[in-house]
Figure 1 (cartoon, one colour):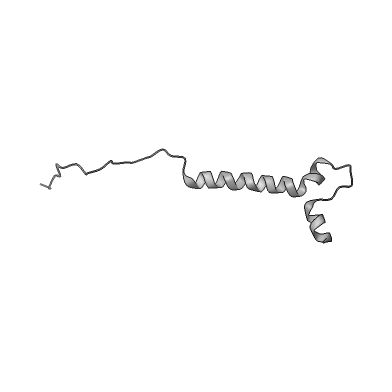
Figure 2 (spheres, helix red, strand yellow; figure 1 turned 90 degrees about the horizontal axis):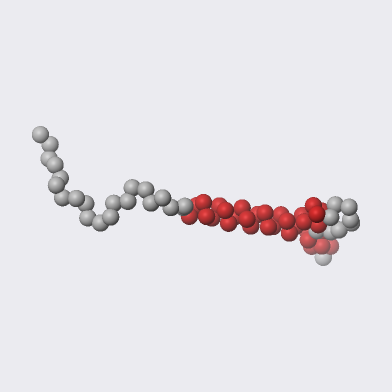
Length: 63
């Protein structure tokens, strides 16, 4: 017959915290930043396709 531990472990026992997770939050923040950067750089070509506009990268290459 085996030994049985009758004393419960001390402290809270957490099997699943049900949290959102830091990795998911960082991933969403990175996704938002990437979308904002793409809109900032390529915005004039996307939203004003009929006009002769320059992007921020075009302005930087002229310097």
